[in-house]
Length: 278
Image: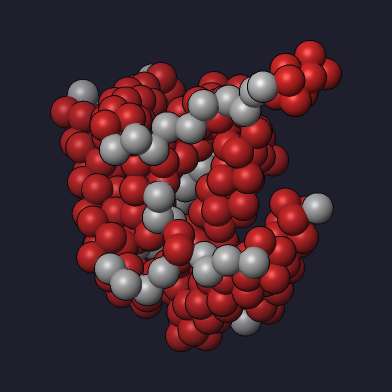
């Protein structure tokens, strides 16, 4: 029940924020304000519902050290996408066609902040964290990564390959980042940095949702396997490989720190009887 209650509370804030952003009709400053407000309210709602349902302080969103962890995540996300787009450009699959719009950058900042925070709270803060208690870190990583990928099948120009790519480079990698740090700030920053670089800096399609007017106007072409096609660079082989590498790095760090949880062993009648006779 705590999983359901936490999902409902955070999802309600996310839905209200999404409806609000849609209602302002693309107004730059209102989109920024509503996006940031949605992110802040979602964090407050998550902290409140965790306290109510688990009777504990939500250390995973503690403010101490949040700025540094968020910054590290953003740098990793931006650097990762820059490396992906550089590889696509090396084969002639990405080119800059002109300058974009600063107003577009501002609006995208708010939109991406809301998306990164709400999705991380739902998928890593609630789903991964609670499921991990039952089936262990590796099982939760695989299951929630799959669910995250499948959720993107609803996007325009979606495909099974695109869903698989998202499952690996986002679902798996972001869960691994949480497992390594036991904080949601790094995956939130990483998620935001990746998405903002994709749309707000390089002006490419984001998960099939069309090219954005960011700092640059970018055009992607060439074989879909390497460029990502209409779904965007997230569906490129380079993105999948980069996400897989970072997943391994984060999971090795999690193991070194003793953060990998085993699958919970189910207690049988024989086990209970053995304990009573000890």
